Image: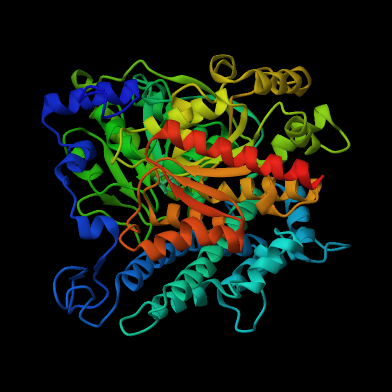
Amino acid sequence: MSEKEKRTVDVAAAQMLDKAQEIGFLTTFDRAKAQEPRCTFGNTGICCRICIQGPCRILPKKPGGNKGICGAADYTIVARNTVRYIAGGASAHSDHGRHIAETLLHVAEGKLKDYQVTDPDKLMRVAKKIGVETEGRSVDDITKDVANAALDEFGRMHEQDLTWITSNCIDSRLAVLHNTTIMPTNINLSIAQLLHQTHVGNDADPVNIIFGGLKTALCDYDGMALATDLSDILFGTGVPVVTEANLGAIKADKVNIAVHGHNPLLSQMVVKAAREMNDEAKAAGASGINIVGICCTGNEVLTREGVAIATNFATQELAILTGAMDAMVVDVQCIMPSLRSLAECYHTKIVTTMPIMKIPGSYHLAFDEHHAIDSAKEIIRLAIDAYKNRDAAKVSIPDVKSTVVAGFTLESLLNIFKKVNPDNPIRVLIDAIEAGEIKGVALFAGCNNLKGPHDYNHLTVAQELAKNDVFMVATGCAAQCFGKEGLLNGEGVQKYAGEGLKKLFARLNEKAGLTTELPLVFHMGSCVDNSRAQELVTLMAKEMGLDNAEVPYVATAPEAMSEKAIAIGSWNVALGNPVHVGVVPPIVGSTLVNDIVTKIAEDVFGGFFFWETDPVKAAGKMVEILEERNWKNRIRA
Ligand code: XCC
C-alpha cells in the first residue's frame, strides 16, 4: 500500500484529502499521524489518571514502580480504565434514549405540537411487550404509560430488573445475567455506581470491576433498545428505501445541509421543514434544498426518510471541503470540534443545537422541542443565507456515489422473509443455515479509527464474509462505509457473495416484490439500532430452541473508536455474542484482564472479545466461530 492508499479506501475522500493538502488544511488524518508514536503506557491501558497524585504508570522493572502510588496493580488500573469507557458510552446512549422518552411523554400530554405518534402499531407492539395494558385505552394513555415505563428505567428507587432487558431477552439469557449478578435495575444508578466503584481507593478486584462494567453495559443496551422503540413510535418504523451515499450526494445547484450527530428529534424536523421550504431556496437562486446525513442521525433519517449519506465519522470534515456545504447542523456525539476552523475557510455555517454540545466560535441555536419546526426553519434559513455567500470557485464535489437500498428495521426484514415463509419468517434464515447455504449471521457495528486506513477494515471483513456465505447486517459508521462502497445494493451481491449466499438472495429477490434487488448488507440503522440486531439473534435463538450463545451469530466492530462502541461490544459479550474488534484496545497491559474478556468471558457468558487488526484473519476467525457453533448444534440435534 502506498502512503496515499494508507489513508482511505474511499475514492471521494481521497480526492478531498488531496484538496486539503493543496489548501494547507490539516485534517483529522494529519492529526492522527501527528499522534504517532503513541505512548505505550496509555496505549496498553496501564496509565492511571483517576486521582491527581498521578498519572501513574506501571514500570515493572523499577522497585516500587510495578504499582501505582496507591498500590493499584496493572490489572486494577486496566480494569478501571476499561469500565470507565463503558460508563461514558452508556451515559451517551441512555441519555439519548431518555430525551426521546421525555419527548414522547410530552407528546401524549399534548405539550408538543410538532411531534406525534406516527406508528401506532409499533406503540401497541411495544406496549404489549413491556406489559402495558392496551385494551379499550386511548393512544395517548398507552403512550403515556410506555414513555413513563421508559423514564422509570433511569431513576426507579425499587429493585426491579430493567424492563427493556427482561422483555427483549429469553429466559436462559436472563438466568445468566441473574446468576452473574449483572442484571441492572436503574440506568443512572449503575453508571453512578461504576464511577464510585472505580474511584481511588475503591474496588481493586479486576473481576468485580469487569462485572460492574458489564452491568453498566447492559444499561447501555437498555437505553438504546428503548431509544429504538420510542423513535419508531414517534417517527415511524423504516421500510426499504432507495437512495445514495458518498460525497457525490452533495449537489452543486442546491442548498446543502448536513444533519450530523445522533438524535432524530432534531434531524427529523430539519428534513420535514426542508420539504416545505424549497421555494425559499429557489428565491435565493438554488434549485432546492438537499439534506444529507453524517454519522448516526444520518442513519436515522436514512432509515425513515430515505435521506442520502454524505459520509461517515472520519471524513466528516471533507464534506465541508467540497465547498458546497452550506450548513452543518449538529446535535450530540461524534462531532469533531475541528469542523469550525475548517468552516472558516468556506461559507459553511456550523450550527450547534444542544445545551451539552457547543463548539467555540460556531453558531448556537438552542433547539426547542416546543417550537421544533420553527427551530428547524430557522436553521434552514441560516443555510439559505449562507448559500448566497458560496464561492463557486471553491466548489469541487467528487463525482463519486453509490446506490443504497436501506431501511431494514427488524420489522421490514421480517416482512421480506414473510414473502418466502408466511407462517414463520425467521425460518428463512435458519433453513438457509441448516441447509448449509449460509454459515450464519454477522453484525457490523461501530466507527472509524484512523489507527488503520479509513474504511479498509470494514470493507475487507465484509468482502471476506460475503465470500464465505455469511448473512450480514450493519449499523452506524460501518453501515455508512458499505453504503459508499456499493455493498448496500444488489450489485454487491453479484460482486462479492459466495454461491450459498447468492442462492438465498435469489429466493428472497424472487418473492420480495421490491422494485430493486436486495443489498449484500442489510442496513439496520444507527448505533442505538444495534438493539434491532440483538432482537434478530434472540428471535433466531427462540426458533432454534437455543440460548443466544449457541446461535451462529457474531458481531464485529472493525474500526471501533468511541466509548459507545466499547459499551456496545461489552453488552454483546454479556448477551452471548462473540465480538471481533479490529483495533487493539488499551487493555493488553494486563494479561489477567485481557484473558478475562477474551477467554474466561466465553465460559461465563458464551460471548467473548477477540482483537485482530488484520481484516482477512479476523473474517477467517469469525467464520471459524460460526462453523464451530453450527457443528455443536448438529451434534446437539
Ligand atoms: Fe462510532 Fe456508532 Fe460515532 Fe459512528 S456515529 S463514530 S459512535 S459508529 Ni454512531
